[in-house]
Amino acid sequence: MKIIPSQIIFLLIAVVVLIFLLVILLALKFEKFDDEIADKINYEEDIEELVEKQFVEIEEEPIDISEIPVAILNILFVDDYGRIFYETDGVKRRVVHNDNPVSNISFSPAKDKFGYVENFDIFNEMIPYDKQVVLHIVDIDTKKTKEVYSGSHRASGWEWFSENEVLIPYGCGTECQVLFLIDIVLNKQYQLQYGVGYEWSPNKEMVVAYHYSWKYGITVGDKYGNKLFTLGREWGSEYNDLESKTRAIWSSDSSKIALYIKKEGKDKMELLIFDIEKNFEQIFQSDVDLN
Image (cartoon, rainbow, N blue to C red; front, side):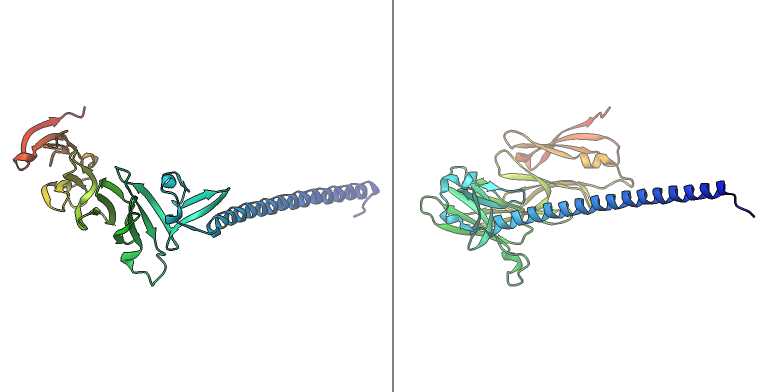
């Protein structure tokens, strides 16, 4: 086959065009790669800067909570991780007690005491499991500090229950929540284990908790750990979200409790009222129309 000059010229032009397109594609590919590398470097630099910033804050000389004026304890800086810092001259210093981080600072109702949690390193095998968190109460006038509770990291915060009582919730598994009620004057601790979702009566002498696993219903107990009343109903053969709508409501004088609950074996709700002063005698019942 004889190739004429015009065909040779066409083939040369085609080759040049292909080479040109190939060069452009490679250039675009390398440009994209460079952009990705640059973005990755910028991202890594941002992360590194953020981490360094966090460590700078942590590595600043910590300050013991006993050195901080009581008047400003309730306005200390708390970051998104619950860490507490004392800020002075633009420098944040981690608040500690015995070199252990402090959290959950709270004043008593009368403002004459405050408490805080001392957090030990949970990865330190030398720290007993039941000594990972310690609650300290400080008398502002005498400056005396008392350790009122110690436990594991499962303790989820704490609160003042009254002027001389504190309440500590503790998670213990499926439908298992324990409340520790501690009298800080008498040094007595009461363990309440009634269910989950605790709701206190107005007079704070009783509490209702909910059940949802084995049966659905409620348990009412006093603040000393004594169960007073339980109402539990069997789950149906098929799941019905009505069982999860159980709700208890206290009367304003704490003498009665109303219960909104699914009727056993029926796809409807009912309202029950119990008289606590009559040993939880049922004094009212009415079906509730959901339509």
